[in-house]
Image (cartoon, rainbow, N blue to C red):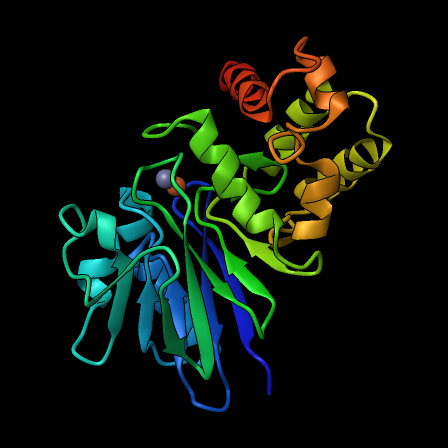
Amino acid sequence: MSMQTHLFRCLSDNYGVLVHDPDSGETASIDVPEEAAVRKALADTGWSLTHILITHHHNDHIGGLEGLKTPDVTVVGPKKDAARISGLDVLVGEGDTFEFGGENVEVFETPGHTSGHITYYMRNAGLVFAGDTMFTMGCGRLFEGTPADMWTSLNKITALPASTKVFCGHEYTLSNARFAVTADPTNEKLKERLAEVEKKTEQGIPTVPTTVGEELETNPFVRAGTVEVAEAMGLAGESPEKVLAEVRRRKDSF
Ligand code: ZN
Ligand code: FE
């Protein structure tokens, strides 16, 4: 059987997600925003936690770590953040792989939001866990990285097959989509997607996961290399990094 996922909301606008392999019985929590919410998700699914995969050191991604870590749980996390996340058992960086549920999970370093941020890719399952690097129609704020870092990081994700499901750490999509139409104003697909997102948000339906293909079509940060977004930023002919910097600057005050 293939990998199963269970998405749940927690804290104010975070998403938690459990990934479960029915064959091995292994279950991973991607980040642990909040102990109680992860415990409830485990109770709801009947799955037993065997792994915790940490994307970055922010408290809304590791807050439940101390409470959920037991000797039966393997905690994987970014090598570069070893000094600021306590309780990591397996330290990983760019190009590393490790076994989970019969998958060879691949690790990408995706700095920009934080310097140590990593992304987990399950190639056979077609799932990528992007933390606060890529959001549905957005990207993370650049707290510890440059626009060039973020551009490189986003490209690692968009290089994956178009059907790859992208899970991210927050429900920021309505705000992202409303901003996106200002940054890519001639994009008809984006206008359609904004309407869909408004409907889903009103009905309380998550806009996560998204897919690589949908982001390539509608995410203005991913599309920083297009003529359309460059022109909308007043930066026709400039590099994607410069365009991304301007998109990010405008979104920060949107
Ligand atoms: Zn964060
Ligand atoms: Fe976060």
